Image (tube, rainbow, N blue to C red; front, side):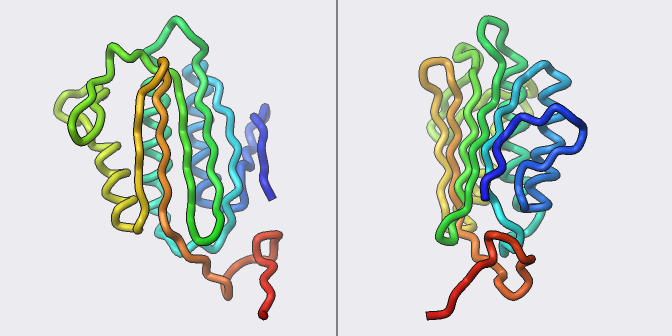
Length: 173
């Protein structure tokens, strides 16, 4: 089941995964406070065998960077597009946002866009480290005024502890 909408009330339900829903809710409110539209299309179940902190590192850094990128533009619509889904033991996360390309520096191992020169690259570096640790990959690119982030990680499901939902319908062959 995919839950896709831009909520207009204070109770946000983006997906079945409690941790991801909390992260998305926090950053949705933060984006809204900065007059940034956040389009969210996610389909992530509960019961993933991944630490909550790892989900915070992944989603938190991606969304923090996207909000920062949008806050630095004035000549185009400020919007963050989030798409995330779980399929065949892989969690896919895509986050796209417009960006001022003049403020982005491409380095051999990534991008630097942070306002604080002493903290540059920590978010992207954390995402890359996490994706490698979990057998996945992170890709980042800037094209036509958009910053495009795509990450996938290998994540198993805890079938025994999975709540009853559309995601927990398993059959034995």
